[in-house]
Image (cartoon, rainbow, N blue to C red; front, side, top):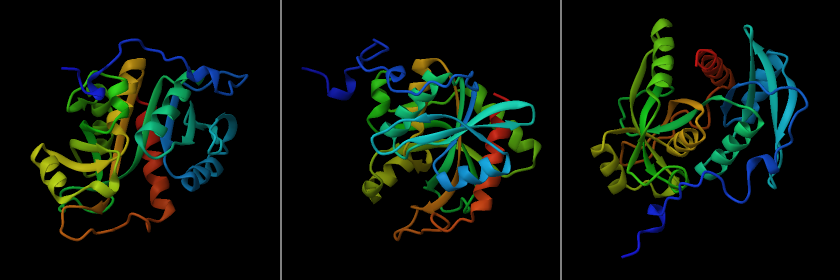
Length: 256
């Protein structure tokens, strides 16, 4: 019996289309450390605060994304927005690697599967359920993928040093936010998941194939551990709070 499509992993690392064919390679060297978020408005605040300069673009039919260089302490960092959802976000990661990125940290929001986790609480993923399609093009089929222990420890140690409350645990990566049904939530919670988002498993799989250092942390937003969806701070979080979280991400990234 022929395997399901998602089980048909190909060990060949490169496809016919390679990311270097579509990137706009900058003339100067590209920073090895990259920090990404999903909010363009937040990135612009960071760029203004740290006097960032444009160094490259991620080119897409949906519109180009500008990559900026800033100095964080004495470390050159590239910062940029990445797209929501595993396929688009992993494409962004591939292009950042082709530009020269070697250490990439992504931070963003998540939904919680445990209502005791408060709004804006920091969560460090230790593994991710692969309930999306992109990761299966980068790693052989499995239900979940472990995140790099070294990267998890870097983030955890920084949070501890600052006295920040956080939770470590398994998260659920999905392609379909409007299909987070009660039955699926019960199953994911039974597997140990504490949160849900749309990119982590795929980013971890791609980073492992490309042999780069990848790290991620998320912060709690909407609550799905309820019969009626609770929005919490999903669309109302002050931009300054996001900026503080991004600065925390930059502190983590320079330690990778």
